[in-house]
Length: 328
Ligand code: UDP
Image (cartoon, rainbow, N blue to C red; front, side, top):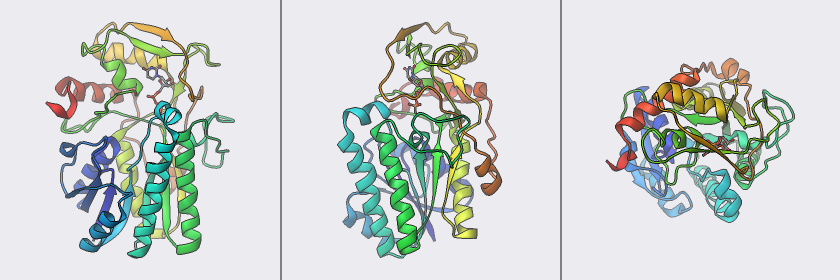
């Protein structure tokens, strides 16, 4: 039986496909290639299709015996979601609804999917654990929370078991150097910083220096993409063993400010990386740091690349070899 990976040509999806293949799983990938890259899919059977297209989806479920779904296909940029909320509701919420309907029609009852730290909004305390209040400050986080709720009600009504993984800040690249991060436009902090030593940008903009943190810049919890990929595999194993729905945070448990990340990148690349302070970005909470104790205890997850220097270095190795991403 196969694992269907939606959004498997995207950044975290492609690393998870690589992890599943390495574990000997049969993999079927569906991606509309709106933001994904065909070259990022290192194996399995690939279909270019949109999850909102239930006819196309149904054909794939008929052709392959699907055991479980790992669902990445979604839009994921905070700033863009504030500008285009309806596009986010359409792709993320309606897309997941169509996917769930197709799963139920075909008797597929296991799903692991990408949620986000953005469901917490401005947290009441850090590190955040899974019981803490969810109160998203942007449409992206709201659509992911809506997806979580939809799957939870799907368990009550249809016995569909789901594990939602709330990621903090994914970064880094596969150690074999074949796949990595390639977004257009790129907005994430670590790749944008690395554009400076790559000669693609003159300086890094620091979005706000007046947050209630020690150096005034936002604090985030950076987690290596291979550690995230492994967590998806472990979540799948958990559903196989227990058939029980759950929610897990995935982060390092340690926060770094924007300024600290820039300093690490200076050390790793040996480049001065000039910075300039610019206004806050709408929708950004001051501090997001995870408690991943539950994932460690219940999934047996243990991040292997917890050190920020290692994370930035692995991203740097990818960008140095692929300055134009998958385009050359
Ligand atoms: N950030 C920044 N300059 C940039 C990109 C990001 O100062 O060019 C900040 C951003 O405001 C946030 C942190 O870096 O506080 C991480 O942003 P990113 O977009 O990487 O991830 P997010 O936390 O939004 O998921």
